Picture 1: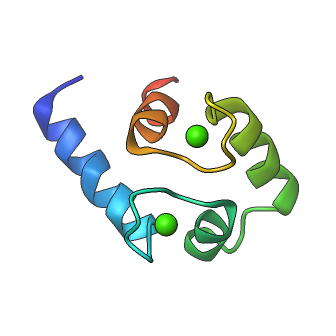
Picture 2 (picture 1 turned 90 degrees about the horizontal axis):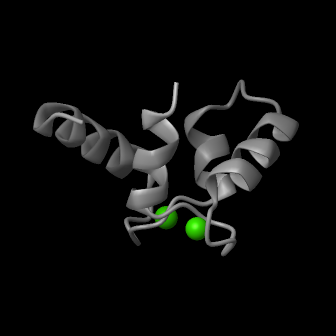
Amino acid sequence: MSAERLTELRSEFSAIDTDGDGFITEGELAGRFPDLPAEAIGSLNRDADSDGDGRFSFEEFVRLMSQD
Ligand SMILES: [Ca+2]
Ligand SMILES: [Ca+2]
């Protein structure tokens, strides 16, 4: 992944992480994407939350965004 892409992802991550604690919760995702159905967010979480703590770290977010 290019440095530019990583910078993009970093700013997207900060935009979603509204409380700035360095993790994206389901609620923050829902706030950012209000049209996304709850089930979609739930399955997104299960797939992408590799350490199972119920929130996304930046590393998990990058992994999520880099799979196509
Ligand atoms: Ca947060
Ligand atoms: Ca996690």
